[in-house]
Amino acid sequence: MILFLSILKPVRSTFGLFVIIVFGLHCGAIAQDDDEQTLETERVVIVKAYTPTISDAFKVKSTPVLNDSVTQKKKQIRYSIFSVPVASTFTPAKGKAENIDKPQQIPLYDNYATLGVGNFTSVLAEFYSNFQLNRTDNVGLYLHHNSSQGGIEDVVLDDKFYNTFLDLNYTSRTKDFVYGIEVGAEHQLYNWYGLPDIPVLTEEQLEGIDPQQNYFGGKLGGKFEFKDKYFNKVVVSYRYFGDALGSRENRFIATPTLEFNIADEIVTTNINIDYLGGGFERELQAGVLNDYKILNMGIQPNLLVLRDNLTLNLGAEIVYSVDSQRENNSFHIYPNVTASYRLLGENVIAYGGLEGGLKQNTYRDAVQINPYVSPTLEIRPTDNQFDTYVGLKGKVYDMVSYNFRGSLRSEKNKAVLVHNDESLPQLEGYDFQNSFSYRYDDINTISAYGELNFSITKKFTLGATAEYFNYSTDNEEAAWNLPEIKASIITDYQITEQWFAGAQLFFVGERRDVDTSVLFTPPASEPSLTLDSYFDANINIGYRFNEKLSVFVKGNNLAGENYERWTNYPVQGIQVLGGLTYKFNY
Image (cartoon, rainbow, N blue to C red; front, side):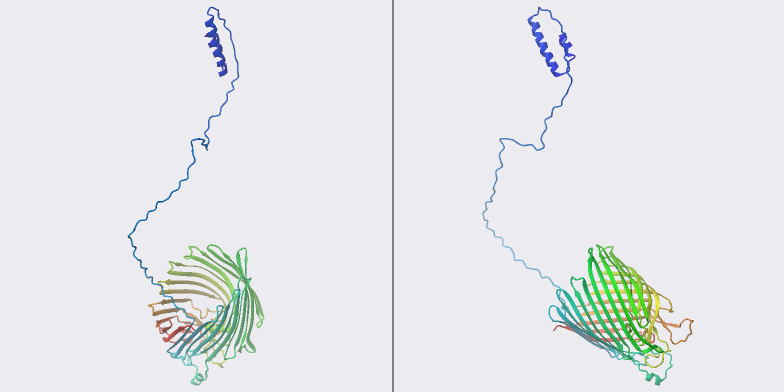
């Protein structure tokens, strides 16, 4: 036993322990067999290095494979329904479709004729007709006539007027292009009836004045539009204008347009050719003919950039102007940049721009603004150096739309109409301080514009506009005959299916004009007068007998003021005109 314990102490491994146990059992067996023998002790030392190892533990596989001989494959089960017919006594009731009121389709007519007569022996006549020759071609005709035999209170000279024009057009649309031709003619008759209040003329002189002036004009034009071509379109026009006193004017305009894409952006280039030539019988000065020949040539490239909420146009215009009569040639570069951004969709849109251009003034344009001009005008272009503006526009709940804008404009040689002085020789009907002419000055204009439109119902609409101007002149005492305030209200009301009405209200603020009744010597300030502001109320009401025939009554200047739109030119008072309109198809 002592030997076993002494041997157990140095044991350091399982194998050593096994050897010790076997050896001890063997020694015990010998001791039992030979009890009488004397045991001798021996010391056995077994040394082995300790080298432990780690055996792999049993791991469960992530996707075990079932290997069971008892497992059987699933059998496919087929289902079937045992259908037994069942007698039914249910009978569904027949349904009835509800009637829906369809909105009545408004018939459209290609032709109409209007005829009306009123006090002051006034006549209004209009005729429009559209002939659809085939699927691609059509012809249009429009005739307009408005006249009055006069009768303004306290007017000495004849004050009747005529205004008639006729337009014909032809349009053809094909798969690859569209082209059209337009022809027109016009005749206007006016009288220089605006004599000054100072009684400086005798009865014989008054009877010898012939205040009548006749204007004649004609036009010829055409347009060609090409689809999916770099050469997008070209518009050409020729217009003649003259009067009964030997004045004549010819104008030719051609505008080709090129359009192509660069990097998914649209580039448009307009080429402008504008020629104006004409003259007046009366000399501008002694020995100097009042003729004019002006050629303006320009090119205007524009890059259109479209993004989600942004529309941006980047462009410029280069113009070369040749005034051969005055030997004055000039070169101009104008900006043409506009942008709009949707801040809140269609509800709030911010916009702005910086634009400019060379405006060609003409004798015809002056007559359309003021038919009482004298045929002694000096004609030259206006250099609109820049017009910059910013604004907001949009709509609110599809019922109210708005537009507010502020702008600053700088114009060089801006044409303004002024009262002719008495220095003219009294030979013609316009030489008695009763006509107007052009003056040119450099004018800067600051303006503010506001517009509101209300769609209260589908049958009632209302619109209002207001505009304010502040002028700064260079040489003239004032911006002659230009108002500081303009405002208007326009409404339209469909009362019933038969009755309809509308109203137009206009307000124009005070204007200043040259006072030709006062003599002055420069450098003293030129005397001026102030024309009163005026308010003009126009109302119309009508009744439809059927889809084709209707009658109407119009009342103009219902405020009854004989206000002066131009110096010494009072307008007709209350005017009432009634007539009928007939629509039809051939």
